[in-house]
Image (tube, rainbow, N blue to C red):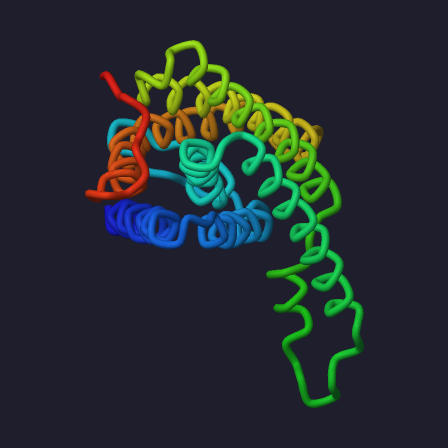
Length: 237
């Protein structure tokens, strides 16, 4: 329960800061920076398989699942304010950042430890990246995040800017599903029970996709809500 409360507070604090910054300076760089950070954290924490006690059910999924699911909220916020082209650019930036992070983590691991430093094994256990997990996360990331941006923009066009909840949910849920099947299959095939991991990820990510709805409305209000600020598209529930 404490972890859930902290997760909600994290979503609220970081996304609202990004939305406030975007409105105040009319730039997406804070949202992009937070997005890159969340993606990088997901890359590292994906190697740990955790149990999530959701009350009525306990599921297993990579520890990255909650953090990574929030990245779709960041892309939707940027898409809402700056358009799909900006989202594709931030996805590219995040991907290059992932590659750079993996390279320098690998390089740091390869360096010979000092004779008085006895934590090399602990270091390797924490930051050494499994090639299959890295490849799976990269492939899933590029496909699912760009798919989310396209579906979100398509829904906005089809509904004339109405029904924010629909484009938020129906872009995130399918994209998260695609991400799950691609990542789990590439990263864990023949090493772990795939369906258990897929089931846990799907349940958790879909839950996050639904929980994101009020946060998306709150962020949208902050993006467009102040008097004299840029006009928001007409919204109907």
